[in-house]
Length: 96
Image (cartoon, rainbow, N blue to C red; front, side, top):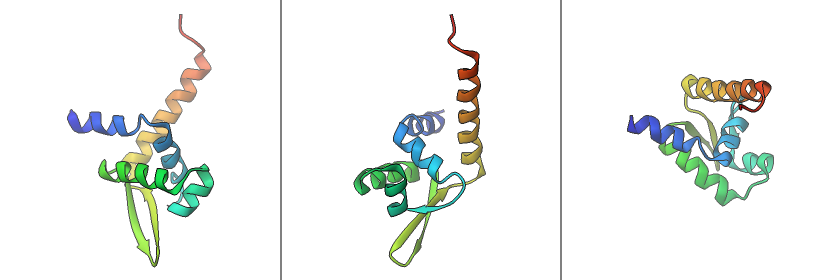
């Protein structure tokens, strides 16, 4: 239960969700993530460290660059399910 709660806590930060969304379909290096998301390198690096520590992303080094991607298909499924749920909930409108 603790590991599940830690995973959802990692996903509770909008910046981390934006990073995951940016690498949903293809790996990206930190520099590209900074440009895509209009964030400082220190911010992106810090958030990637949190995601890496929770086994949500993996990385590979290619020369001076480090490329990040989703850790596995479970992370992709979790993120896609959350996005689908939010879209479905917004179509229903506010609850009374």
